[in-house]
Length: 296
Image (cartoon, rainbow, N blue to C red; front, side, top):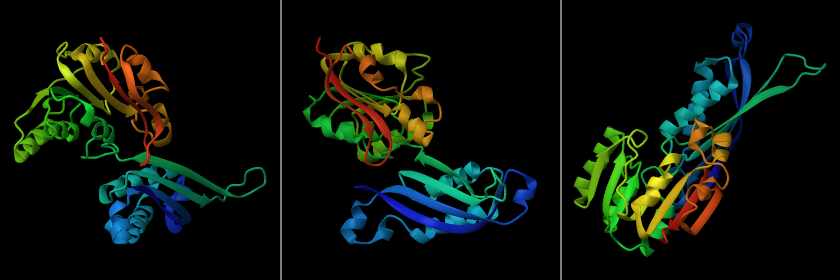
């Protein structure tokens, strides 16, 4: 149950300005924070501190504003967001910074400000399996499953526990090691992992998989190889960021890793679509989500 938590009009003394003269003078900064959290447990227990500590959030912002000197409000905002991600479980964070300006523009004095937004770097679900995958996997016949860009194994481990014979691909050795260790702890013997850079070696076994999963990884030229890797009747579950997410949250930072509207449908136009959605999800990110099967 993702919910926005809002803090308004937090006033702090800071040293922030474009010129050295500005930065040498204490200035009042008004800070607004909006962050999304999973509030389910807090609602059940009627205890907000199960999820977020308002005093902690305010103290983190205050500490950064009072101890760091920045030329740009955007820099200060990014530092605040990064620290909040390190110390809280927020999914997305938007910080608005406003300060009075002594400069006169067209005969008037007013305020200047900046709004900075970001989402948690490791992705919207963290270590949890993709909700899209969880929703659709019960209807998929068990067999071989391929998890592309496995990472630490949130989807691969889920599939192995669900009874698939899973193969996970990733180029991050450390992440694969963490996945392997977790599989051993769970006693899963139906999961194999392979360290591979798919951009350099875009190789997937043909006509081999009942299911291929690809989340938060975009390599456009891999699409035909993915289709060829599915057995007839095999299912593709694909989900990643839209360009809108880059514009709103600057994530991913490289916009070539984001999809244009309807681009995902074009990439896999040879498959039969079972489900498709584009837009904002409950906890913030803008995603394109596809479930499709290979008809022939």
